[in-house]
Length: 55
Image (cartoon, rainbow, N blue to C red):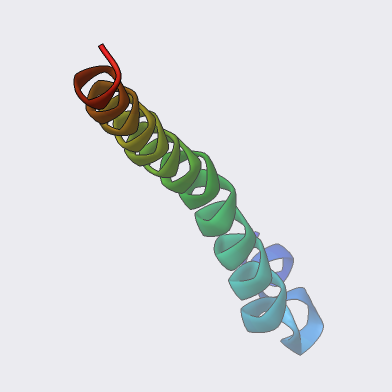
């Protein structure tokens, strides 16, 4: 089992790559959701201002 994780001396690179990829795959949807919320709030704010200016 240890040889599987060591992978002939390349284990740190291989498992590090998997770890970084997993981290980005988790972070990307969270960042997109946050960005989407900010954009929707900004659009709502702009629409509210336009309704006040042009009743």
